[in-house]
Amino acid sequence: TMAGEYIAQLARSASWLAESSRDLGVGSVQVSAVDGTGAPPAWYARTFRDEYDKWATSVQRLRARGVWLSAPTGNQRVKNESAGYNWPASDPDVVGVGCFSNLSMTPVRQRAAGLDIITRTLDLVPFSSYCNTLAVATSILVRDVCDRRCVRRS
Image (cartoon, rainbow, N blue to C red; front, side, top):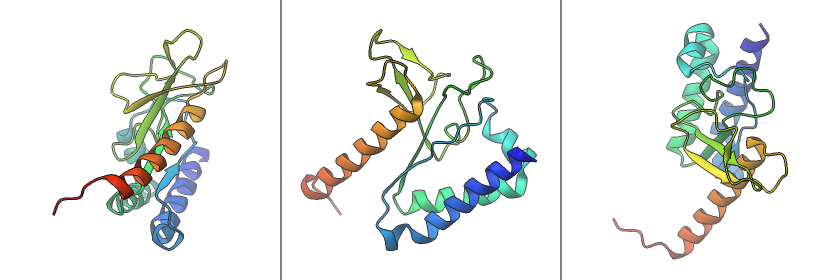
């Protein structure tokens, strides 16, 4: 199915990143893919068991290596506004990023309680993919500052 291939492609990408992240110096990854349904991770795990297992294993390897991995919680493709937020942002090992409007200062496209981060969009029409980019950039800056200034205790 198309959804199964979608997850399989993400799983292959995550696996390649898990293998290559150290050699390439990758510390932050933005996944700008959303399903638009708000189905929970358990649904993907049941429906696409092999693909989801490969995805989950690769994501856990990335996390173990300290790689930031985030995804938008909703976007223009949302089909069910009352559903939970989009996978893969709803995956417990992925940082889910929503956004709030620069004009009204109200949350938009965050889709559910429990998301990890809400960032401000600079766009007139807020899209959480754009906000995810801001979150990834911030993660890079914070890591850079901490690598140079934060005291590490053994």
